[in-house]
Length: 502
Ligand SMILES: Nc1ncnc2c1ncn2[C@@H]1O[C@H](COP(=O)(O)OP(=O)(O)OP(=O)(O)O)[C@@H](O)[C@H]1O
Ligand SMILES: [Mg+2]
Image (tube, rainbow, N blue to C red; front, side, top):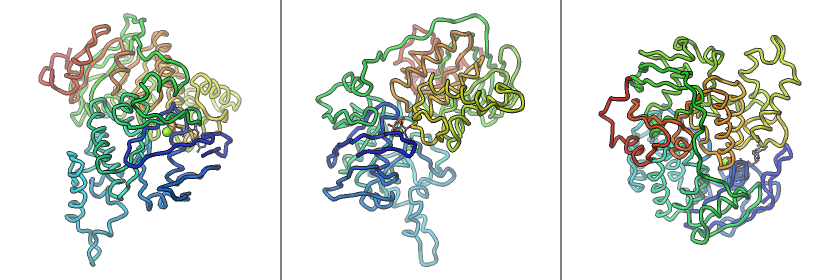
């Protein structure tokens, strides 16, 4: 299979691989290796430039996903979207309601819920068909997305980075769920950057590197180090230490904040110059609200936020940015970037409001060179064409672009939410290095992350969030992951309010 995109980018070069019935087959490769491209071809979403597919020994060249679905192929996309305000059952059945329509065209909700419930039971899941999607944590939404595929009787299930959005202790539950799908006799393609997950789940592993298949291996014949080497071609050091440039002045001070909905409760902390302060926690314990409170998009019921001594509580997001705050949202497609706009437009977004490029008119050449420097510094792979729409970039390349743009603000405080979710080892290192460089200049970083390894390697101090409260605080080098996980899961500290107001 080969694929050259219209802009000339060769995403796949004569790759060949084979999937066996009933196996979990992992596909690994760094950002932009061509994983999503290959899967999108299998699913009939994009047309290959050349090559062929045999599905159950029959020639198969889907022109549309419906042809793939008819053969029992299902796919959960990297950037999935569920309809938010309806129930689990409604979402799963979406588009197939006529199965449950009576002669009067009314949907028989009971029958619909029952048919969904039987699938949920078979997978021993703890959700109800009546739950509303927007009341579920991301991990459950992810499972609903897969149920939707299984409900359509898929026997061949493609999961494109399903765990990128999950918190560490949601992952094992999820992997067990995927094993349950294999037990049903189905075939699973599993894409992930996390080799721990891949080795725990997969029977076989195919490694892609820059559009080439390096090989397919039985899991028993390889180890994590050798797979990492084949993915990126060089050995990488997976262990990191936090930067060492802590100053004395406070750059950000959060004093007893609670939000109107009561999700964040009486949260207080200080961020010093040169400091990376990590917020650990299982997803859904106030991380999103903390981000929004700092960004200025969440109403506070009480408390105050100060940036270098001045209150910013009453400022909107744009005014906060002007005051020196930069924001890396975890919703890069929805809020962070404008996917249909070009790379250059996305790099300019925000910056032009600060008069960086002339007061009234943006000089084209300035915008170009500014964008080109971000693209070069952050290794954004876009076939050297900055007019490319951001939507065409791979997930990891989008993230590097977002990080590059925000750091280019030269902020006093950078607030980063899940900055390396779904990015590969090399991009992760690049993003971490950019945070390290930023704090060297005296800026502070708030790092909200579900990835404990990332926080322990990067943050000078860790606060654990549990149900909207800060339940414990630890300082480097006194990190104890087991202890942290006890606080994250509420085994310890849940009733202990010591850290909530100091
Ligand atoms: N529609 C498109 N037009 C042009 N180039 C594209 C398009 N879609 C993807 N690409 C490019 O093709 C290459 C492979 O992208 P792909 O999305 O398949 O990578 P990936 O392995 O899934 O990466 P990630 O881990 O970051 O999701 C990348 O360099 C990407 O920027
Ligand atoms: Mg991808």
